[in-house]
Length: 102
Image 1 (cartoon, rainbow, N blue to C red):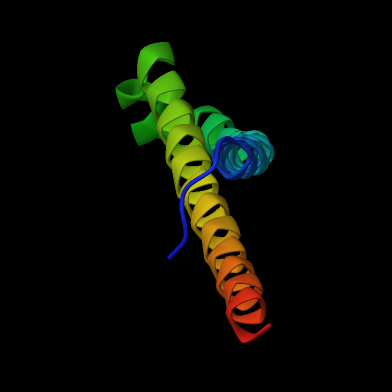
Image 2: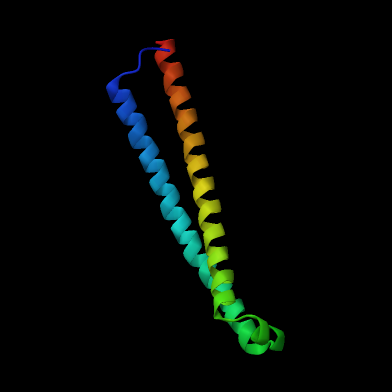
């Protein structure tokens, strides 16, 4: 392994920022979809089911929907960041092999 240069550190930092940004965007998209997917049955059940009407107040409904959205955000963001890191580690290893071979 060669010396670490400023440019290689800057390149790795830029790659890390790009990976985390991709994760944030993918997580936000998933959270929006999950919110809608959770809100429709939650609100419908509160209107149609007597048990839900009497036991799920507005706070409980909001908690159900926001929990689903939060979980979707973190799961998708984590998977996206890990997939990007895995892809980049294979790319870095391939480039290192080329440098060592030449």
